[in-house]
Length: 109
Image (cartoon, rainbow, N blue to C red; front, side):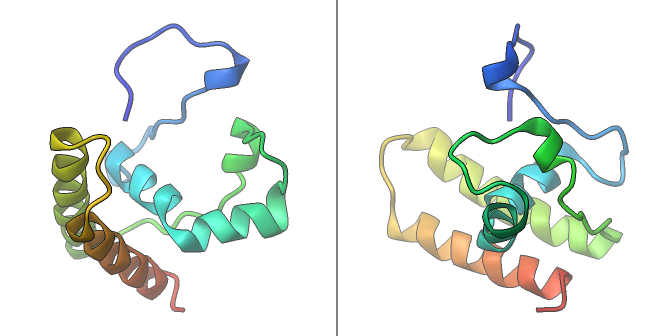
């Protein structure tokens, strides 16, 4: 999640234009293992993430219940990282695991 800033090619931003697909939803999906693995295997296996590659990732448009669940998980993870940015806690790992399971279910995996 970024606030307003000046960017160059090395720090591009991707944000949603649709209210039904908010930025926190995209952030949650992109931080999950499923789409990260998809990206690395099928789109770009280099260390340089390109915005045009990210645009090729298939995003499931969530219904209201799915969005509500993702928002709850996102808020929990975001709060932990905001309060302890340098600490990787068991609590955060557990939430990330729940996120991965939920993302897999969205993609029927």
